[in-house]
Amino acid sequence: MEAHTFLLQLLAILVSARILAEAATSLGAPSVIGELVAGIVIGPSLLGWVETNDIILLLAEIGVIMLLFEVGLETDLGKLLDAGGKAVTVAIGGFIAPMIAGFGAAYYLFDLSLIASLFIGGTLTATSIGITVRTLAGVHRQTSVEGQITLGAAVLDDVLGVVLLALLYEFSITGEINLINASKVLAYVTVFFLLAPILAKLISQFIGHIDQRVENPGLIPVTIVSLVIFFAWLAHWFGAPKLLGGFAAGLALSRRFFLPFGIAIRTNTAFSHKIENQMKPIVQLFAPIFFVTVGLSLDLRAIDWSSGFFWLLSLTLVIVAICTKFTGAMLISEPFPRRFVIGMAMVPRGEVGLIFAGLGAAAGIFASNVYTALIMVITYTTLLSPFWIKLYYRKFGKYFV
Figure 1 (cartoon, rainbow, N blue to C red):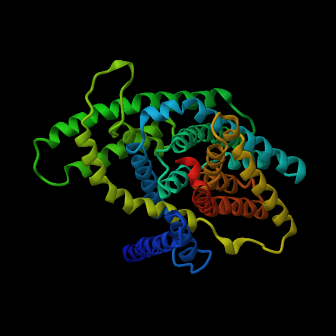
Figure 2 (tube, rainbow, N blue to C red):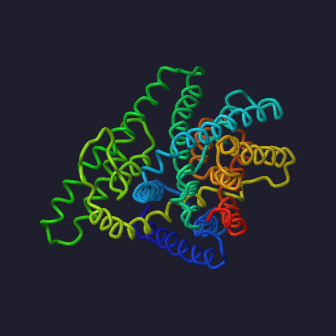
Figure 3 (cartoon, one colour):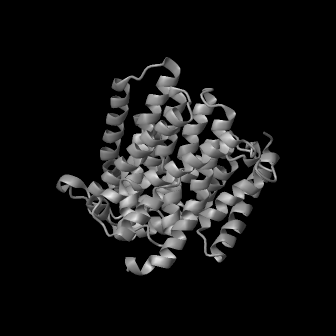
């Protein structure tokens, strides 16, 4: 792609994202809705101005990494740990139920192949942590009890999704599943998530020490972005999702972070606050690119709207995709309104679902009508879930005071 063409596409992404985000906010919807719709409007579904390419996908990946860094900055580790058991229950229930129900519906009701049915079940296990967190932030509930439970569950969901994706990918290539390789992936991810925040905290102490002695502007944005990128690479090296590297770095730099086992490293709250203020514009620049790219990935023109099989499969999978995500939330000991909104927040599939579906399509596992049905399910859960969450808080907000 020539440079001027890419610049025009980037211009279209940034301007449309901002305009439609403001429009969505003025209508009482979360800003993420406007950014997702922007991708649909300028993408292949409508105007066809922009198509996803390697450069845009790379910027989108940076966007979700920076978004998860901001999530980590705003996370209260104490609350996150307190929500640990409940988050695990929500994640496991919301992972196993969609997998079993999605596989069962595809394999037994629609007579699809074993590997296609497994990939459909895998796609339905996904939760888009980026969209979920942005939606909760839009209603100022990201630091609430339900926000911390959802965040912990979504993080664990991503880890489980990586292991499942590794299993399914190997099965699609070799025809057999290697549990030893899957166990290694899970072990590496666990080690990374335990050690990365401690390492990031130590590095941040060094950055803070330098910041007190350097007067040139821009030290904090450059060093912190470098730190986030390094931890994203480190997460990938360990076999974890790269966005978890951004989350781990943000968590370590949070004003509410503490180290385990009594390790005495003083948290400089003034420095943490300075990081938040100087990094926010960078996050606000890159994060919308990610959400627009999700919309760009959806080609609504490719759907055969007259196919009865397509509509029946789509409707069945949408019902499964929504209902099964409430399974884990209904098992925890919280008031019903809180359990219900946690279930709603786990519904969006977004980019995680697209990764599963895209891998299945690239491997030739899905027929075109099955793939488009999956895309419809991902589209519905991605676009409308934030809207329903906003309405739910507006109507039942008195139960969360």
